[in-house]
Length: 408
Image (tube, rainbow, N blue to C red; front, side, top):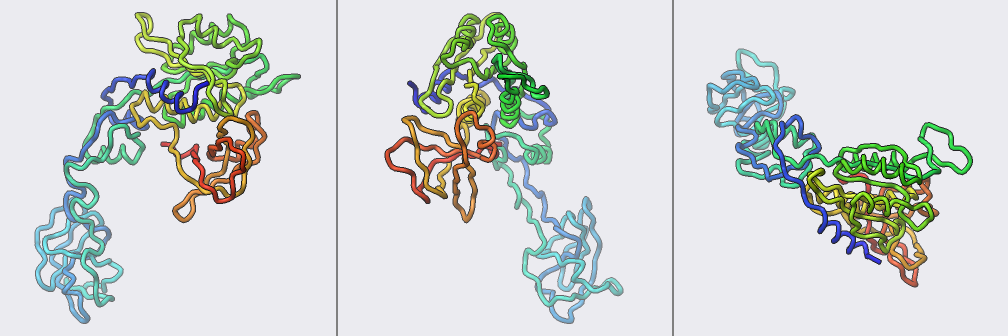
């Protein structure tokens, strides 16, 4: 049976990054940059005032000294005068500072001007106070967006400041989500005897959206070959297809054989881990009818198994297709807050509460009774990797952890 690291390698070998395309900046939010983007100017492009006040020379701020006010400058205006001994220029927030300025004194620290002269309520001010120097935020030639970086709204604003009306990005992958099983009913219906609500589709939809991809809900397919074929054919039109359930070894676990019938080539089935052992991965190759391949993940039906497999493998695959660093979620080191005993012979990705205090992470296993226990997992914001061993993990021991909600 494959290890988790071997499964990562096979995913990377079989998923090729998509080609980049150029789009309007207004259409690039949440997308991944396909190249490094550098600044073509300094920011700010001039020394500017950070607040309303007066541009001064710090050596002139002394007890009982009055300064002559030469002019007033608002944002967008250019100074006409330079500062000389015992002079000041009134400036507004964002205004360009005149030559000779080495500080801006706040309007609150200035007494009411009399005959174009001002005095102060303070006896001194340090050089650089209330000034943003040219290039302090960003310098010409500096990389401001790295290739593979997701364009969150602050980056979009920065690129607008740089005048980048178009950017090269990797297209948003589409991810079809299909839940399978005779026992499932929609979330807005009351389950009958032996039935459960379709929580997996909603959960996977949220995980797909969180990853920056476009989720395409396909509803529920019954454990029937004809129904599965119809739904899966639709799902294969997307870049990815996620199926929940039907990949284990039960009588009605029909998904692998239906996928094979529809031309999806199996890459691996089952990984040495808990929860999530039955995971299936395959590829429907590109052909004349389908210009792009479709990558298919068969996820276990138990909700926490499906959740963990998405965070480990599907997120890794989505990063790969957008040419991002191939990590599912960033692994960190954390101190256990309590002892924990691992049972069984498989590595366990255990739901946990991960916190960050005093420059270190701590991890507390939640009360969790297995892969069907969504209530327990809902108290977690990440997971701990416990590898099987004879002795229990001790309080304060260092473990590998992943957080679920800070990827983007």
